[in-house]
Length: 280
Image (cartoon, rainbow, N blue to C red; front, side, top):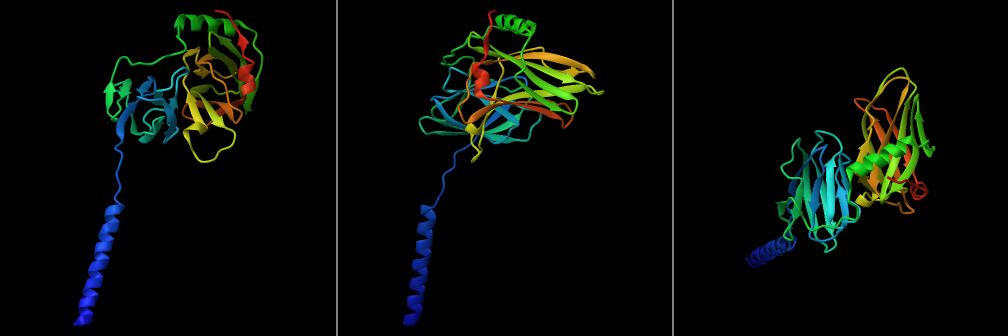
């Protein structure tokens, strides 16, 4: 009888210990807010504090911080109808903001203010400071002058009978203008789908937002569309000024609509720093 009592007490002691351990190991969860983005419009997320790091769950969404700001993250779709993904942002005060991201043809909000408690508020204005005021008429005038220049070859990617070239980088009023040329020497037309500019690390370690940051153009002049067989096309793509740290490079990738063909250029900081001044 005594032995049975000892065994019962021992069993009760184990159960109480397990219950205590379970209570100590309870987890808390950060709810993820829902975010809808589209391909032809930019969604602006305005955070209460400066952004420290960003991580996107998929390359199907494009993310950048506009120059001259610290608390804004711009998001747009890299392609239509992408599979659901997520976005994580950490601000300088140590808070983590988590978003579930879906594709939508017409997002209900394009300017979203994130409050201190993590709630979202749609807004037509926010307390932000931009270093560059973009004037489309001025940028168009500069882009036309860039195309009038003779140009000078900086980088070339040649695959089969397709050739993508950077024929000059120019600077005007803190805006960088990239002049690109696509040559099609094949007998088949090339339908351009998307051209992406992103900043990447030379050496990849664990995946973080600092390893690849997509850049959103502030202006595009004569975008690549259909380049017929035996012809060529020129375009100018403008960005708010930027430079590259020693461990990073600029990736330019042009993909084909409905195909697997793509052309890729890799630019170093020296190419950016040698941008040629051009007047408007």
